[in-house]
Length: 257
Image (tube, rainbow, N blue to C red):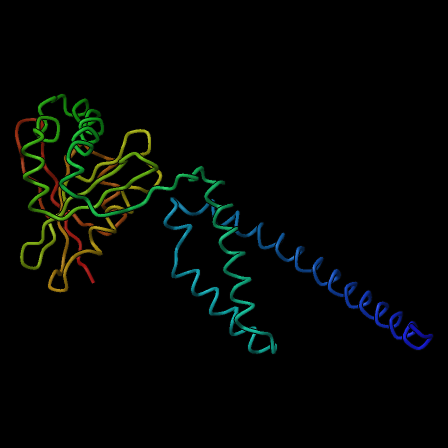
């Protein structure tokens, strides 16, 4: 290698080091911005009741679309920006799930006849507190037999919440002309209050056909938690019906879009 080649090589190495220094500077700025983004992601995570709200594919797509638009405005490669953002978003979703204790996040899926045994166990555990409220161990959900439940699941739609290998929530629904009748919304006692009931209710409503204009359900008049949940989700009391002394059913209805 002659002197000219050596000089060119040294110049090239010097230029490369300058370029790498600029990349390092930009990387520091990026990490600072990611650190700030993490602060806001953690704040948002505290406002989300459960894992589906964290994953929210519509929100992910909205963020990615906006990032691509910004890339186009700045003359950046939109595909590279999208791939970078999707990886970053996935990492932040894992962060939020871990923050909320949803590493094994509940998944909402279709309820089938094969789930009957687990559903029966779940509803007996969940309705034990209702039996105490009403002083009645013979509530229908507690005395329902497995054959009866299998027959019921064969003639209705339903959704279940699964966390790891465990079925932790369920709901059933039947469409009758323009009304979706929702029943037996059940959540495992140790997971109540984290949004599973809301998610199951939303899944049942979303599964209603195009001709269904409203959803109807009922609960006992002393079931304050159930009443609060339904009212928060837009259900309005229609009427009350005495089932037997000490137990009054509150019928509620909600218009569906």
